[in-house]
Picture: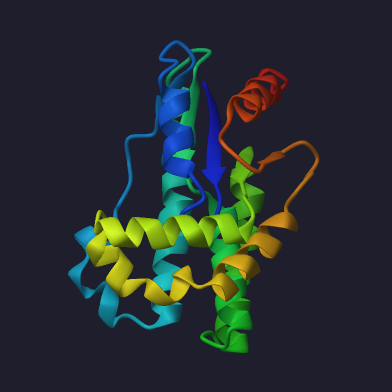
Length: 203
C-alpha cells in the first residue's frame, strides 16, 4: 500500500478532493487516525502559538508514522490518503514566524524537528494550492453558514488575505521536489487525472 499526503491551506478544498478520491474504493482508503484540535481539545485556545505549532507538528509526525506502519502491514495496491503532512506544519510555522508570533528560537526548534521528520517520513505529497483570493472568499462564505463556528471563532486571524497569501507563497517553495510533490491549483477533473498519473508513477 502506498501513502499519499494531501496538503494545502485551510479552505483550499482538501476535504472535497479527499472525498472525491475516496469514491474510488478500489484505489483509495483513508487513514483512520486524526485529531480535530478545536473540537477535541478544549484547552487549545489557551495555548501559545509555539505550543500549538509544536503539538500539531508532533501529531502530523505521529500520524505519518502510523500510516506508514499500517501500509507495511497491509500488502495491497491501494493508496492510503492522509489529510495533511509535515509540509503543512513547515508552512504554518514559517507564516507565524514572519508575522511575529514565533520567536527566532522557537522557529528554529520547530524547523529542526520538521526537517528531521521529513528525512524520516520522506512523504509523497499532493499540494492543493489555489489562488489566495479564492481561498479567502470561500472562507468568508463558509463563515456565514456557521458550519464550523467554533473553529472560525478561534482561528479568525488565520483567515485573512495576508495570512492565506503568505501560506500560498510558502507552499510554492515545495513544488517539484524530485517528483515527491504534485502541485495542483484546483480539485477539478483534470487535476484528478494528474493525481492518478502521478500515483501510478510511484514505486
